[in-house]
Length: 204
Image 1: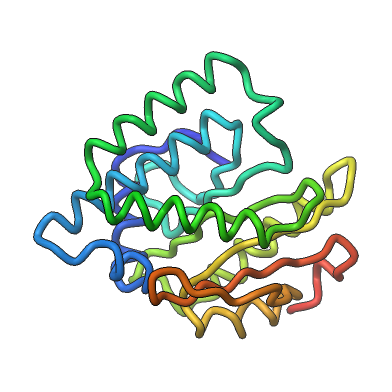
Image 2: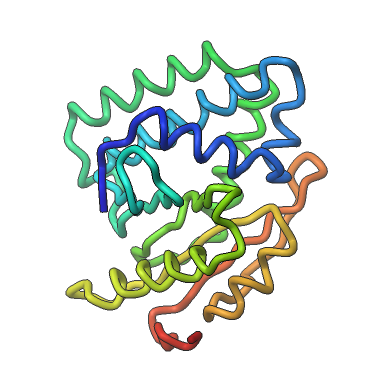
């Protein structure tokens, strides 16, 4: 687990999400790559400020990146971190179109309302370099997250959201259940959760 995220990591996530339905929906102009990187950079900075987890295999030549929120809330965050987070949010407002910011606000509200009520791990993003896709890395990362959740002093559930319908069956193989499907501005969002009672190692 490496918290030192550099431009190589941001570039990997940009490539990995180039064909993601939500990113295609949000970014379709000539500034697409720059705006994608701005959003991904903010997501990573937010993760750092909230003491989240970064799962990766290499500092400069990674094959994957996973961004995970710990089972905590803003009441546990320092005043300094909250101030810095607000600053990052203001900077993001200057870099993204209004329609993108409006969508992200709706997205956050909908996914939060569909998440488990109790503290849980949240898989914000998982990106595999296109040249490494299809080699079982996604499975490896999900197992790693299972191990983290299982080894915590308290057993926690794991939640995630995906806009790619093909991903639903993949996550279901690992014990995730579809809690709800909602539509935001014409784009389907699939909210999934793996309960803490699930068998963490049900896929070989």
